[in-house]
Image: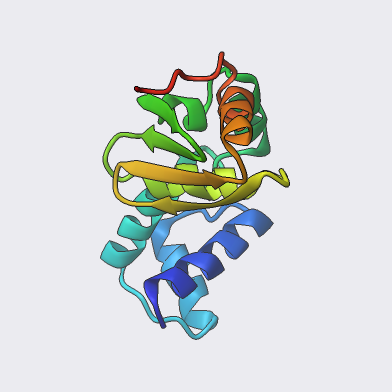
Length: 151
């Protein structure tokens, strides 16, 4: 099973309910037919932006995603270091290992002008339908005036 497939199943499980411990997550994945180690799971959690709360490990809450769209706190906005708009692409810089979690949250937004995202370790590329859409989406996502384009 690929890393992407494992992480997709892990996200599905975490959307259903928090998972108390990493060893419990390893057991749940094994029951799903996905053998994994705690070390691999730990890297997956970092890559997906999973957070530890008093009730267990979970993906950032809907409240955090809603906060992101209004520009207030939460994991999403805390992970944004720099935003630039270049024609139809929004480039987002994050701390190391945060880009995938930010891209996943952006992908969950329902916007017809959002074509998709590509995430590296600390950079997310967001593709939009037009330059106007990129500016509008950047302003909507990050609660700010559209970032200026470089000449």
